[in-house]
Image (cartoon, rainbow, N blue to C red):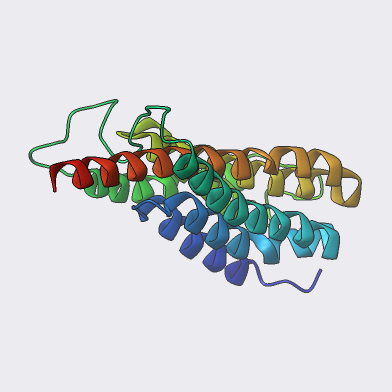
Length: 215
């Protein structure tokens, strides 16, 4: 195979850490782009150029749909909506903020992903190789982001991360024959980006209207 497992792991881990920690109204698109780039070497090793194309296509579609969703939300101001940046699922912690919780989860995910990579064989991957680690780490980090979610944006990022990681794992399991399944798994990332962009567009339009009225 000629691919260094440590290099694959390093790329996946760095991308996953960025994805689990990123915040803001462009968090979903940023997380998808970084995670797709970080897992692309793994996808290339087992799915070739088509595997990389699946992840790249998901990243490009996420960026475009996030912008389209935001623009759509801006031009339909009569629909009131939820601001995806406002905590809705859990009150803010007084001692530990959301990023501190996610950072702790990212650290614990290393142990979980290590166990998975050396105990769960997947298709072409044997447990001795440990090449499943970057995918397992990305998937666990996505699950952590979902479990610790306080906002709709957090949920969207978590769903996108799980989708990208699942798609890459599907490529490792079946190689080129898995492209349709991998592409299907990647669809959730652009959809999550569109939803977040839509809600951001609606909330920003509503905020602008309120400022104009107060002025």
